[in-house]
Image 1: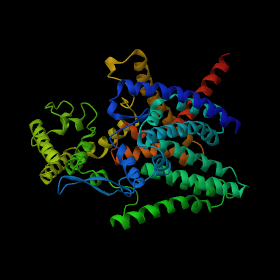
Image 2: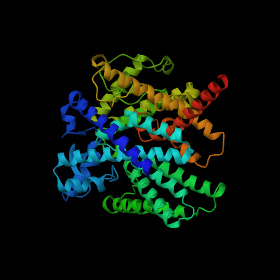
Image 3: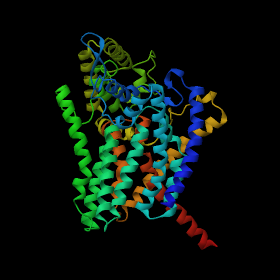
Image 4: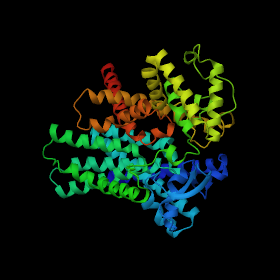
Length: 487
């Protein structure tokens, strides 16, 4: 407990300094229309989290303005786009204060929870490795990295999801160490279940973490310690069962739909994520390109902007029937279908035909190379657009150092984490399921779903830091041993 208080104090001081610095950077470099109050940064998806809760407090139900393609107008309808994960925190604030103040207070809450999460990451690393150096490395590396911390400023789900994931894992690991305290086991395992489902209501991908916790629970019982009761399985699932029962029941009653987590963007925001875009995504995915339109010079950006340059496309996607001129023509079909939301079937059929031909001509690239490239694009980063700095040429020396060091630190952690995974797999480790989490998450998002946006890595970043710290500890031990032998 003494160690926890010390780490909370250190994190409070350092993260507060970082928070003030980045707040000033946001106000200096960001569009003022995207800043609410003092701290709250608005992004494209912000209102999908906040608007339904504000409507609920205002007596309009958990609803949002949805686009109706039949009449081209926005209408207030019951929402199932997002699970109400921030409701327990934001609804009381919005009830008591005006919107600007309530949203600023949410950012303060995110910061405070993030500070506690940093301290708990030290505890998690210590519980997993029983090594003080590894735990200290995990604590300091995660503390000084702005990669996840920058999301404390945003009206998005990343900050809270990361904090609650850490809380859930901490409480679970504590329950494993209370063999002779059944009451303590019940408290910790229920707390773990509460925070894990809370994280899932914010980011459904955290369901993988809950599944791995369940695997770890059963594996630990069968392989290591049968004094730990298997009754912990239903205990940890009680919060999940209750929350999902309420959410699924509400959606069925209100919308006559079975929605276990959240609606897809193509269903809930068809004016932004059109059926044309839905047809375009798999084509770019299997070409091995970046489908996100906000990445400059990406394949995705090509289809949305005015450029006629095809330099971002590799020669192997072209053939006698699909030339660069054909690509430009395909783009025109896409823009018409996307902007006018008409003739979407025409574009879908053309894109599908090109995709099928590419699969026939390049089966290895289609089935293997493309998903591997997607995984690398997610797992290693080349830029971090969330940092509130101007263009690189306009940055000060300090801003350039922060941006470059952030990218280098993340990629170094990614490399060392792989080494830490190998080290963990070479010996029997009772926590191997938890160590596997960030890697399985990256494989699913990168290779299967092709979701390679940088921010998707934020919620697993602290869980990459732990195996990275394991590897770095081993490296320090090897270097120290070699130095002792030479002396």
